[in-house]
Length: 283
Image (cartoon, rainbow, N blue to C red; front, side, top):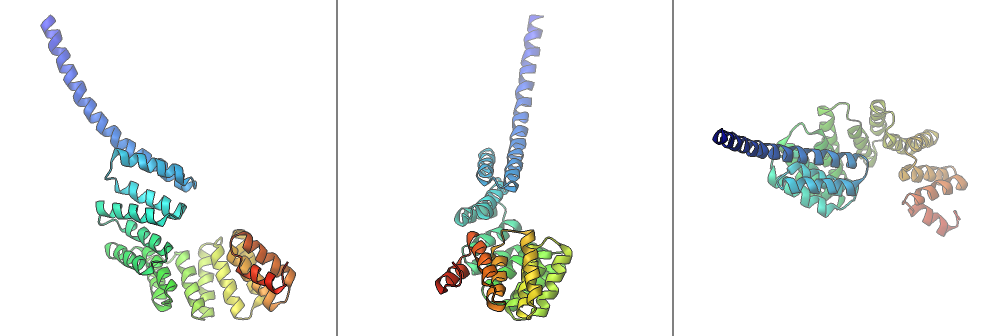
């Protein structure tokens, strides 16, 4: 009986070790996913440093976890403006998974944030090569072309994005901006109308339509749109700057203009306000 007990114990011990090994592996897999998901929640909440801490922990569990590098890159890029760190993380994600289209697209965004538009365009193009239906990559590449002054290429990319996703409000708004820069104000108004129809809370579409109306000489409509943009997003400095311009230059209302330009300056856009103060138009 004693021998039988020892044999049973040994068998139980072996099974426990084997089960324990399997469970540990499963726990590691569960841990890395849980850590990644928690980090993503913190990104959504704007708690980027806490998010990065969780992505770091996920990478300690699995140093070849491409999604953790990718999400940490997003936190560095979109949340903290640390583009070099973001580029490093997106590059690592791509090394692990060379077919990671989102990593190429967001590395392109980081390059664009540094003003390196040719590198950005190269990455967006790679993302499109991997996924020809990647509407965001077309839109991002369109933005980069626009920054380079290549408005026709930008419009072509925004149009392609809309062919893929006809409900893509941002593509309509971005295309409207390219039309504005080309002086095609009616086309710009049409695109803004479509963007607003899709997303009635799209502040930048109202701002862009206001700028189109402004250039068409329809100043009251311009002011109405700038005001609507600010109702939706009170921190949109560009709308304050644009509305202030109409008040000052077109309508001669210095009080309202200076108030708008000061608000824009409080939000970090001080050019018009500082110039008006030097000229004595604003105090």
